[in-house]
Image (spheres, one colour):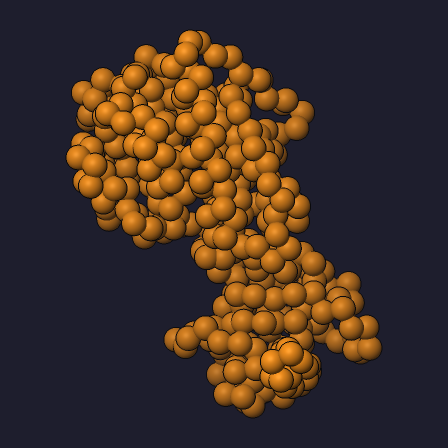
Length: 339
């Protein structure tokens, strides 16, 4: 079987490596995004790792990088590889019918959700954003619809309470790699059929944009914590610190938890208070008191900020930030222009 890999970024790399390992001599080409686009495009949440091109070069695999696979040039380059099967993982382009007609056995995709849930470009981020506790990987046949083809295999995982999009994608990628390898082994033994997707269970996972990261402190704490997790590593969750008599400061919030204390007095959402908490380990004799930022959220809930990054500064703990800013109670997080 002549297999062409199509993908970009860290989610695709384990699949590419698995194909090279499981089907030696059968991977005849790589189609990946142009180098200038990898992880740099506006609105792209794609993470970069070793690099698909680097892997291909190490294994003497031909690489093509058309700006559009749907162009006449892109179709011709793909056809020149004479593929029997195209395997796709996070490629980043929608295929037209003329492209889908090139390989004899069609296209199969490694998709990071349990279809038909979370069809679209950002399934992992949307699963976390919506507070899901379970997700997984689906292998399906690509058709002209967006993630609508018949499902050939699935594997599910539990989402960790503090797991970010980047962390979950990294965990799903090798699962998808193993799953696609098993599907191809079945295909090599003869024609296979899959399961149709239930149209009544469809949900969408559209592309995450840069401004998707802005935090709305009027939402409940549980929703905000999920939002912060879902925006890591890109575009990151951000807000603006409004300080009395000082310049506005843009701040990235990278880690936070729901604050369960109930003795705080309700105030405007986004209002900051500083609390002291004991952290450490008795066994190591490293018990100490640290300061943390607690933020008023919606519905009388609160968020405790664990890690944040002021504009132009390094990532730091809440306690480090407080020491550097001498942050008093009453300052507010919020949009650039508070109402």
